[in-house]
Amino acid sequence: MRKPNGLNLGDTVMIIAPSSPPNIDNVMKMKSKIEKAGLHVLIGKGVKEKRGYLAGSDENKVSDLHVAFSNSEVKAVLCATGGYGSGRLLQDIDFELIKNNPKIFWGYSDITALHIAFQQKANLVTFHGPMIQECGADHVLAETIASYKQLLEPLCLTFTASEKNTYPAFSHSVTAPMTGGNLTVLTSTIGTPYEVDTKGKILFIEDIQEEPYRIDRMINQLRLAKKFDDCVGVIFGDFNDCGPQKRQASLTIPEIVYDHIVPLGLPILSGFPIGHCSPNYGVPFGVPVTMNGADQTLSFEPGIHK
Image (cartoon, rainbow, N blue to C red):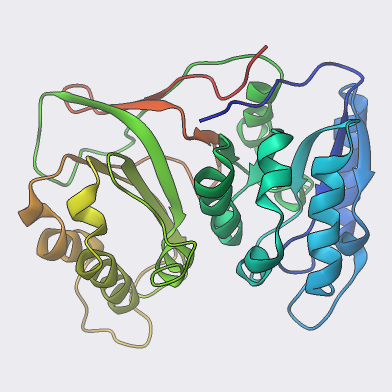
C-alpha cells in the first residue's frame, strides 16, 4: 500500500462532496478553521449542488474527484459529508489517475465505497475520519478535530477499548492491514467488481440507526460471502442509535455476533470511538494495525510519509 505525503503549512486541500449535500454553513466554518491553521482550501463545484438526496450530478462529483487528484497543488482530498451516493461513482472513476497521484483521502460513512475502491484499485492508504461538515458544527469536540493532526505529522495511534470486551478473551496480538467501514455500505459491495477484500486483513465495521435485525442480516450476508473466513480479526467501532425500533422483541448486537462470528474463532475487539460517535477519531486504512487481546488495544502505524 502507498502512503500519501503529509501536509505542510501553506499546502492546498480540496473539499469535495461525493455523497449527499452537506450543510454549507458548517462546511464554510470548517474551511475557515483549516485556513486559520495555515492551509489553503479549494471547494469542489459539487459541494454546493443538490439533486434530491445527492450532492449534484454523478458527472460533476466524478469531475471534482478527478480534478482533486490531478491538480498537483492539491495535497489532500477531504469529504464534506456522507449520506448516500459515492457508490454510484465507482464505474466512472479513473483509478490509474488515483494510483499515479497518491494523496491524502479522508472521510467515512458512505465514503466507505471509495475507501475500498481506492485501496483495492489504486493501492492507496486512505483515512477513515470525521467529515468537514461534522467538524464545522458548533458543538464538535476538540478531540474530533484533533484527528486531523495525523495528516501533518506521522503519528502512531493507540486506542484502548472503552468497555470490557463482550467477546471471547484472547491474549495474543494480531497485526495486519485494516479494511472496512460502514456495515451497510460494505454489504452493498458484495457481488460487484468493488467487493471488499478481507483476505489477510482486520475487518472494521460500524454503523448508525440500523436496527439489530438489519445488522443481523448484513453480518449474515458477510458471513455467507466468506468475508469472515478470509480475515484475521474483527474490530467493532461505534454502533450509534442501533437499538430496536420497529421490532421491540430483539436480539442484541453481541448476541448477533455470537451467532455469526464467534463460532469462527476470530479475535474480536469492540468499544472503540471510531465512526458515528463523539468524539470521532480518524484512523488510516491499509497500514499495519495491531489488535492486542491482552490489553484490549488497537494500534496504528502512521498513515503518511513525511
